[in-house]
Image (tube, rainbow, N blue to C red):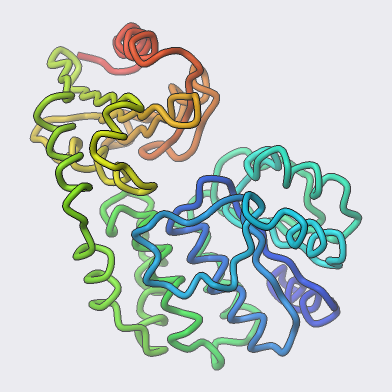
Length: 333
């Protein structure tokens, strides 16, 4: 029995299923969760999504009403996890990624746990682990689950739309080197199932607010620093600057990719002051410029070679100075 048939058997045997994903939701964590939810419902089983926090605003066009949030409904999430007999751990490789409140619940739960993820170095806390680090996204792996468990015939637009979204966002609109022939094979199956890809692109691209564009314009014109000796660019934004432009979650998500589009740039780093810490986004180009090592070794983070995240408890100025001091060690001139 292949591992996906084994997972299908666990789904069919379970009574109360819960889907979890990492803190600071993104397109892949939300997309894979919703796609799996609709697939499990199609199999006739009871399932709930429990996430640590809300999805960014640019994903609100999806129907996220089925997602319970730990930071908004802690009692309901606690009850769901405590009563679950099967828990999916999607798009995270370490239990700490769900935040301390949900981590405590998951560690106390005796439910069977299944990890489906594509990040490096997975912890071995689940009972079943699908860790495919060459996959473009967790959403792609959910399509693999559907296909290789023998259920491709029930794949439809409702299941496939959030999965296409997850693949799209986690590959930078298919620009990252994580995109392989298999990725396009999966996309073809989603289109064949009725997914309207052009509408997904429109909903993601044509939903800017005036304040978001003004914030991004300010960041590019006033806060962009380019270290030309290393072709690395950095943007830092304080909580006061974010407040001035009425920042909402998701407003700076594309900034690092925008900076990386500057001709000749090897890497882009954007950090913002939120919730008392600096949240850092790292992006780079090419196998010779990995950023996940820098994120892991110095900023309590990690991720993919060309797309990683981290955090700093230093001030804006101190974090900026630390980044500048480290650039020569990680990027050749």
